[in-house]
Amino acid sequence: MPTAEILTIGSELIEGLRTNTNATWLARRLTSAGIQVTQITSVADIVDDVVDVIRSALARMPNVLIITGGLGPTIDDRTCEAVALATRRKLVLSPAALRIVELSYKQMHARGLVRRKGLSSARRKMAYTPRGAIALPNPVGTAPGIQLKQEKTLIICLPGVPAEMRAIFKKHVHKNLMKLSGQVQHRVSINVQGIDEATLAPLLERLARKFRGLDVRSYPSGKGIRGRIGVLLVSPTAAEVKDAKETLNKWLSEFRLSSSR
Image (cartoon, rainbow, N blue to C red; front, side, top):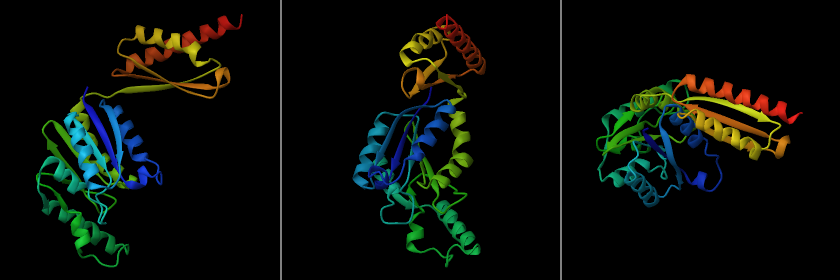
């Protein structure tokens, strides 16, 4: 199974000023695409720290490294610079990225969202990318995403604004990741009540032994039999997930029946 790491950049994340919804959203999409997320890291807007984290990730050689944040026009948006340093590439003005930025501001100006449509130095800054990177158009914002291959790792940089990150991912990234994985992970959730986690554990172990391709996970909330346990069943095949769900529900019914006697 292909592997991926997620790196979210932003001092606001490290300081607890913003909830890291990007990491959660990306992890779900990667997992459902059949790509195993092996690590999620957050780092502040400090170039040297970002470079160190990127180099550490590349040393582990994941198939995909997705980076969010730091692509905007302000002084603390330095992700492209960090990626260039980490991969030992020059930071160059990308004509494709420049066209994306220019078109975005023309459209925003026409809608009355900005006063000027021209390219200031701050706006041009968003078009500087590591040499060899491909610019990814931003359907709902101004900062392009980028992607580049570093040895066996595909690096994908997306804006930190959730709506922009998701738009670029859906339009330009998801289909390529599906080609990489070649499979979809089928998932089903079951909410179990009236059984404590320790009592449920043997049933889940038995289920995993019966269905060898199944990944069985549990997420308890509350206490004892008054709580609730979310059970997640994951498999490359829809049939196995369906059969496993039916089997677990049957076992749970039998357990409750025997417990009530």
